[in-house]
Image (cartoon, rainbow, N blue to C red; front, side):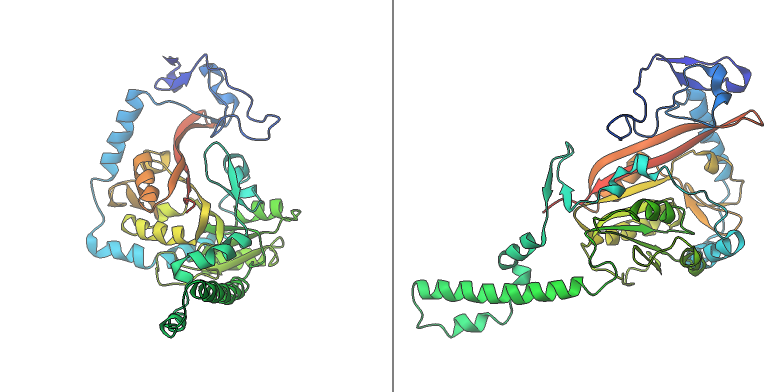
Length: 398
């Protein structure tokens, strides 16, 4: 049930009343409610906390946000200057990390509450939303080699071309023998390839794209350091300065993590691990910095890196977030895409856009949520509407 608030500072705020929700932390160790469970049921207590979850917008809130968005996007940056922000994105982000180092963003300790999949250190992949899982082992890979056309030997045909005098079961015996030999050889090559990259011995691999100065990296490494199930973390950023900051951090461990400079927009650029080798890909406030026209290509390439059953975890800015509404005229590159004063760019998503972006690459939607919260500055007695997108998409098990 929703009701309007009459308090002057909260005149347009809609709250949720009469909703009974379980405590966020229960005996299962999993969040009872996605995206938090701190609900504002009494508007007079709005300044008792810094953040409120699941805040609904009034019609006036929506109309005001749309009006501000139209105003700040009415004047576009001239086309001749727009390419600069795309082509020199790494330079702008490099300058950002030179100026701020690791002091600008806070560590994302909330990751494990919203994305418990990060800590799922098991050699299995869930194929159903109800949690039923099927283990995938190397033995299953080996047993499938003879049944997969891509693993058939190009040289095996000459055995059968010369076998005109072979009849009946002799032909089947040769077929089985050749397939067995070829599968053994191919599987040996497969294992050699898998052992030729950092973290190849790991049983669970996580990859964070756009790691910045390590605000996700070090909370994850802290959680992984005492695990004995073989997890390994990869992370990349196209800012060389950001990568240097991570490597120089006292908690960086090459035994658990491999960080490298990489531009995900460059499709031809190679990764230090093969396709279909990752269990988790983490995209947290990074896709929004990429030009909208490049996003599909980036997601399509990342999808190929996931194992069947692997998960892509996404969190980023939502449409009409406070950040978008604060932009002034002359900072808009295209619809809902802006450039900040330091030259870095940001896009603001809708649920439908997020779904299309990931589903069109063949991923299955597990979660796609709009996270609307009320951020509070208790000192200044100011309330601010925040909007983020949070999604989980899975690569189908073939």
